[in-house]
Image (cartoon, rainbow, N blue to C red; front, side):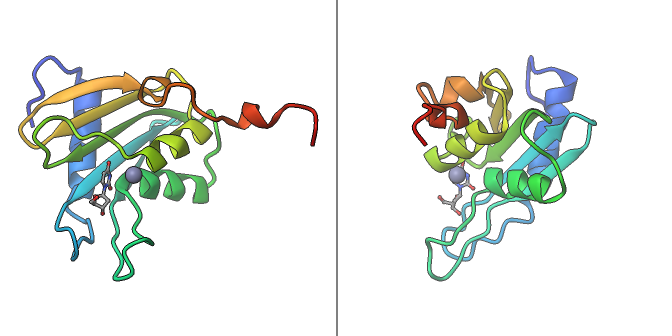
Length: 144
Ligand SMILES: O=c1ccn([C@H]2C[C@H](O)[C@@H](CO)O2)c(=O)[nH]1
Ligand SMILES: [Zn+2]
């Protein structure tokens, strides 16, 4: 896919997200999302959204990628970037829950690449997409 003006490495990450998008399990919304999370060793952790008949157990693509990576042993500070893609009008916008999960495991300045199937893209950062976040450090008030 051509993402005009986007670096080769982020294009590759969006392409990996698109590959994962094809594996989405979306019988209820029919809205596919894919994510690709790049770790500190250069490995990519893929994620797709996985829906459920009870609706609320649904897991977004971003969290699938992150939880797979953590389950495989990755820890905070060991992620370099995440790309997310969906069939949206403009670049997809991660939901609030996923933004909070990214805050837990990623540095505030970690790039978040968002795209769509038309080749539109934008880049922000973890802090950029969730300003004023409640973070692990927020718990450090000494009163526990
Ligand atoms: O950034 C997003 C936004 C939505 N979804 C999923 C959740 C649900 O399966 C479907 C519709 O909200 O898209 C994601 O995976 N990531
Ligand atoms: Zn989400």
